Length: 134
Length: 405
Image (tube, rainbow over all chains, first blue to last red; front, side, top):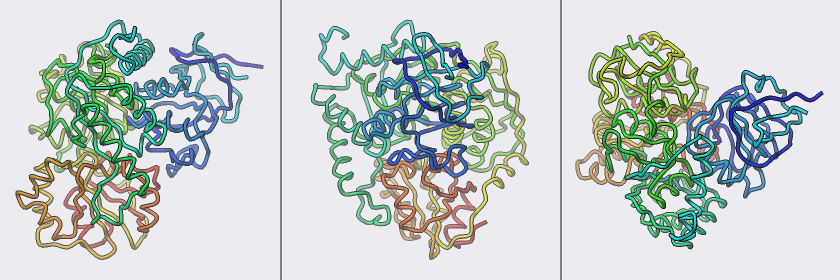
């Protein structure tokens, strides 16, 4: 049975994919090897996993302005995530997502956003501000 | 601009800004007076490189004074152990050339607020490095959001930015109450404080308010506090009551906003922050003074500490600064003192953004990275260093003895 999570705000086209759910704040510079697309920060909850084609579900942001270019470059390298869903975000993530044409959303923690399991299929519908766990 | 009357580059820039502004519910633009852009090949990659090339070919020109953030390469043959890829080096040189074509003054610095431009209270700017943003908002009372990637370039091309976040009064009010009981002895203490406050409160729109500061903090101390808060907490502004311009009193700093978190920081908390960083046993390690680049007075103090000493076998030691301070440090003799001691001083770069850093770490066999920068020990971790925060004196001692403590 599918479950719907309301988000506060979102941008971009509808996208569907497999969730990769992090337990801590994220920065593409601090946590990600941007050549391979694999999370490399020692002890990060998704260490060793690739972000390619995933819908990243992330509680918060750390830093950092690297995201402004990073998502566009990950796309050019063919190792980009499909979408970004943050509990709380900073403007760089939006700026980077808009440049890359990558759907992005913020909010939904109180509606169970962070209880989604990694590996679950999810659909982000930005125009209607909702994330559906399929 | 949207109609393309001012060229295709401006049209693309304003379209981009409209999309970002809409996300945050911006109702208008604000004119800006200054831009700080971040564009280097390490973070842009081939994707960003191609994008920037296309923008330049469309005739992009900055319409307000614009400078550049630190680069990812040092262009210094002497620092062979930090060698970049030749191919990427050629691209980085092209990036610099393109920035100049766009009318960017390539200052290559993440401390523009100490050496290039100091905006005034209430002045709207568009700065693209977190440490610069938090310093501008907090210490100058200027107004800027994080403007990452193309966002800062877009602001430079249009001369405006969407009015959301820290351009508006309501975002600038304090929401985290910090009582500082600790005695602050070193810039690293301020970085540790940034970690203690920022890490459990990761929220761009949270604004810490510090009370209890017993002596007037210097620019370098506020720089390390801000850089660390921005790194751990993604914060873009803080107040220090009685010190920063929008906090003459605690009441003014909070402005009636709800306090979501209260923290008291003692000497024991600062010491615990240091103890949380543990060394791993290793023969080869590196001590780095960077992140942000060093001011002239940091260079002076570092030269005094290294005078007559030598970096120990098995250790590497680096400091980074911008071109302007490097030049002054050479003139004043600080550079020679540091180089005589075996410290490699890089200009125009910041250590954690060096291109090919994962490979550089492996080639040199470095395990521990020791620094007095609370920011650096957080930002560099994707490259799998074991990072350790220590006070400046301890960093110098570790560099010169090789003893990890």
